[in-house]
Image (tube, rainbow, N blue to C red):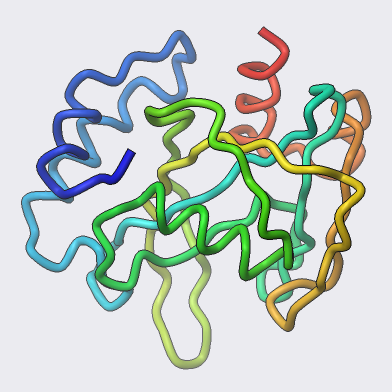
Length: 179
């Protein structure tokens, strides 16, 4: 789906989830979207980001990046930088952070929502990422390219995911895939 601010607002208004920790997020996103600069990284206290939950065709593994700045295993994603097409942002970030080019969007709508704190750095204060996640499929046999944004990239078997991260939102996305 090629999102605009209006279609994103509609998608968030209609978004439902069975996960209690995720339920309050849609209303918070809608409030953020009242601000003109919600898609820009300099908008504080937070801004929109887009992420890609990337699984293999067999639904056995997920592709994670060991984020260089945060030193955590996470799904690829990043700043919208003014781009209101958040599914396009998620795809762009997936391509840039993994080197892969052949992705299949598995669900037209939003896969997951999360709001999380990003710690302060010397040049920027602590702030929130309002992260909209989309689910993609990719081929684990394609060559991965580690960029300066990552310490590592790895296809992690779903049954071993807890060995890499205990992040609540990642565990929630896992549960969504497992059904």
